[in-house]
Image (cartoon, rainbow, N blue to C red):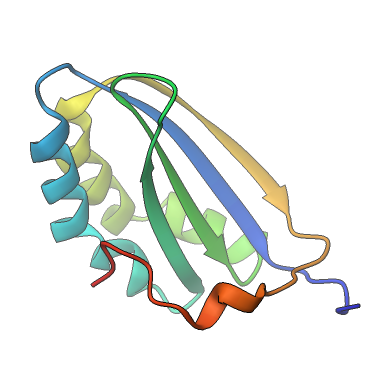
Length: 115
C-alpha cells in the first residue's frame, strides 16, 4: 500500500458552447503551459465527457493547496482564464486533497492524445 499523499487536486467541469468544442480543445492545449509552467503544478488533463454533450473536465494536480491558491490569484491565471472564457457556457470547480495514490499496471502504456 502507498503512503498517504498531500497532493492537492482541482477538477473543473466546463460546459462549452455547441459548435465550439474543437476550437476550445485547441485553445486549451495551446495555453496550457500557463498552468504547467508553474513550479507547483504536477500536471493537468483535459477530458471530454462521454455522457454529456459539450462537457469537459479539467483535472490539475498541485504540490499543495497554498501554492495552487497563489497561482489561482495570479495575473498569469487571469490571462489563461480570459482566453478560455469565450468558449464556456457554464461550469463549476471542485477541490480535494489526494489521500492515497496508486499507479496501475497500465501506467507505462502511452495514452492517446498526449503531447
